Length: 465
DNA sequence: ATGTCC
Image (cartoon, rainbow, N blue to C red; front, side, top):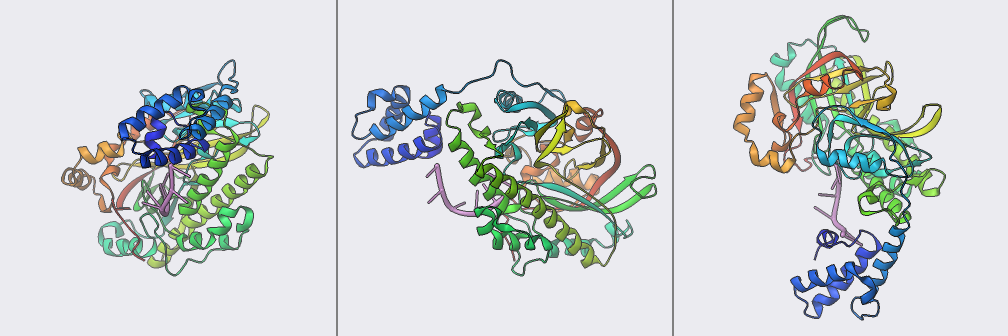
């Protein structure tokens, strides 16, 4: 029986899960059938005290009793922390997750962006301000996942005349897929940083080095396109430019940091009820909290370096200069002052949008994205969406769409797709124009990016190098 | 999003 199934039967993750797995194994050895096991587990979850002295189930019953006693000690708050959402018709489960996050005793305020959808713990598009603590799953698995856009000193006509050259630059200078890495690692000063701030960064340093300059999988991409400025801005004259846009994060090492410290956070907060366990926090003045904070910041520098390598190598491959560079994290936590109070602001799939702060909000492989300038709205905790947001689950998208229709959609818009999974097609995403409209008070659009040559990980892409 | 330990 798998942990997931046991969890559905009411076994909380953590110490009780371990006991449950062992008990189930022993019971199966004694001839318990699957249905009997399910029934028995449910009975123990219901009344663990009845099984306290049972030879087979006693240990599980004891750990369940302990966990449930901790949970009973959870002290809720009189009223949830204030929060509001931007955009209508947001996914119900994402709204529920946001509301739950505002029930945490450590939460000061929240905000939900118009691209919101269900995540792990905090929803994607969720912003959460806490006092003196950090929540690993409110930062996200891909710590410091970010966007970077560079304008290249290259004629826009290259998008039609030099497609093979551009394609070659992407193929050659980054790698896609889970576990993607370079045999000959990229050179970057981030590898001279102190990687011993956490046992996780220390032991993953070599893997991180080999993955420097890679793109990973999921919704990550590298694409060439046009950047259109209607007015002089960003140090550029109004006009149409050739630009390179990338989306990726801290790869395997960032995920390992998240995994390690969220486990610790959960073990330190056994009192949290079921709907809040994935929002377990670490006090910043604790050893684990300080370690996570240092590791998270290192992953921030690492993800920045990751994009720097991608853009440096591609521009170098093409032999062109970079005219403009814009970038921003969207899975990160910052120390910021709000209402005169120093808070920890977590943005999970949300773009920093302080007054005058530049950010990038892409739509999808076949729809425009926008370079934006924040308007500094306090209520949104100085944030905006980080994209259009999914409107369909990956499974649903794979079942519903086919490549023939998608290709036709992309052809119409002059987009060449090098590779991607069917779960990333434009139709699986919300309408970016509507999302931008619902956050008009949060950001001003400065320039439009239209993707023209796009690469994402294939459904089953594995490293080639 | 990751990579195979709940």
